[in-house]
Figure 1 (tube, rainbow, N blue to C red):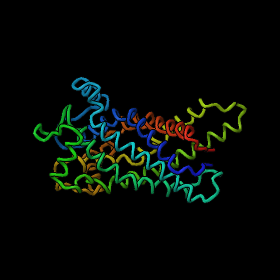
Figure 2 (figure 1 turned 90 degrees about the vertical axis):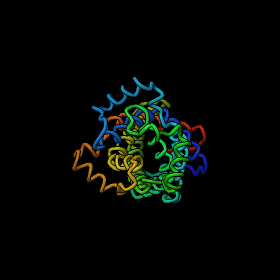
Figure 3 (figure 1 turned 60 degrees about the vertical axis):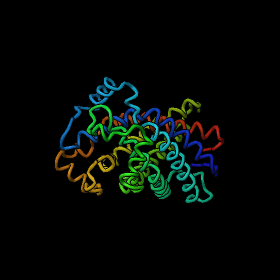
Figure 4 (figure 1 turned 90 degrees about the horizontal axis):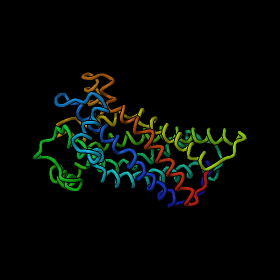
Length: 304
């Protein structure tokens, strides 16, 4: 894909990309987490749809409710995105050797993306645990008032006090699996779509403009985000339950948990939150890719 070895610049571009992704995508993520917590539980309040959940949050908490848990998400996503793009780009360059001017190849993209996804899971797990525990508070919360957290820092401190440092990494294996598989799917989709669209643009008589680059970024980023979540949403459902349940005896094996959900709710239960997840995936990942590519240009990273 023709990238110069730019070292730290990929990490900087990735960090900026992560911030834009949270701004666009966090409200959708809050709805997704609430649906996964409420609608897979045997008891308690059930939402009819993502829209029903959104309207209830807006009525009781306003816009602020949709950004509940955004602070750890901003911090986590900034570092996660920085490492993801940086490690992926450098690993891909290492596997390509000196030949950067060639079409995408699965045997380079998949291991590079899976490796990067595995590394970032160690940052994502504690930040997402705090985010998810904050998100399930508020509207229609199943959490008793006496056990609610006053903020992200309080949530992290209380988790360490009651569960130890390892408590922050509850659901770590599931997070690692989600990120390794999901990012392999994401970057494969992104690289092939991007290459194909640029190739068609070169073969056409249309002048190449920055606006066209933005359009390619929107399409390739948005569709790659949908591909990511379509592949790993059941693992994400399991992760949300593992990280938010007060039951310390609940299995941490995502496959055992998903089998239980499947028996109770079928395939639909394993894909709880699909609506807001897909609704979020396109704009959030489109924003992330467009921002990453724009930042890359400003930093002098050249790509074919």
